Amino acid sequence: METENLKNICTQTRRDIVRMVHGAQSGHPGGSLGCVEFMVALYNQIMYHQPKPFDMNGIGQDLFFLSNGHISPVWYSVLARSGYFDVAELATFRFINTRLQGHPTTHEHLPGVRVASGSLGQGLSVALGAAQSKKLNGDDKLVYVLMGDGELGEGQVWEAAIYAAAKKVDNIIATVDLNGQQIDGATDEVLPLGNIALKFEAFGWQVLTIKNGGDIAEVIQVLEKAKLQCNQGKPIAIMMHTVMGNGVDFMMHSHKWHGIAPNDAQLEQALQQLPETIGDY
Image (cartoon, rainbow, N blue to C red; front, top):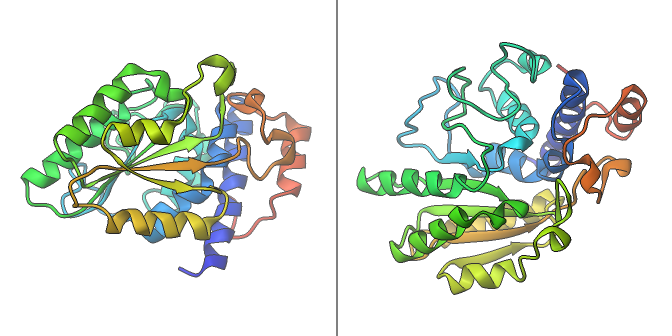
C-alpha cells in the first residue's frame, strides 16, 4: 500500500481512538495513539492474514497478540478498518454487552482476537506457544506480539525471554513499545529497567530498533528487516521508541493520558488536529 494511504489510515485511526474513548468516557488513549503506525503497518503491509472468515487457529496465517491489552482502542480500530468487523461497531466501545471490551476478550467472539489480554506480562508466553505450535505443525508463518515497556516489570516476561532463546523459537517478532510512561509516571521513576535492548541481547535475542515509532516508513523498514532475520536460530525483539499520546499535542509525553478520557472540549481540540481522511464510523 502507498505510504500516503497508510498515513491517511493512521490519521483516521487516531480519530477513532479519541472518539471511542470519549464516547465511553473510559479507556486508554495515550499508549493507543503512540502505537498507531506500528499497528497500521502490521495489518496493512507486514502480516499475511485473512480477516474473513476468521479462524481462531490461524493456520497458514501470521498471528498477532496484544500483550498490553489496555491499548485495545488502536487494535479495534485497525481490526475494523482491515475488514474483521463493521467499522460502525467501534461506537460500542466499552458499552454494556459490547464485543469491544476495555481489554480484549474471547468469549464475545470478536474476530481478530485470539486470547484475552490486559493482565500484563502474559502476552509473550502466549505468543511463544503459538509460535512453537506453528513449528510443530510445519506452518511457516510468523507470530507477532506487542508489549509495553512498563509491562517489563513483570517477571513472567523474562521467564518467557529465557525460554524463547533456549528453545530457539525463531519465528517470533516481539516488539516493546518504549514510550517511557506508565500509569503512575515515567518508567524510570516507577521502576527503572536500564538498557532493555542489552537485556534482551544478553538473554540470547536478536535485537532491532525503531528510532521513531511515529514514522511509518521506518516502522515498515525495520519490520521487514526483522522478517528476514527470522528462522535463523534466535527470537527477534524490536525496541520501538514512541511518544505517549502521539498526534494530539496536549496528550503527548504525559503519563496522565495513560488511562483517562477527553471531555467534550478536549475531543473537539483533538479532532481539529486530526482531519477526517477515510470516513468516521
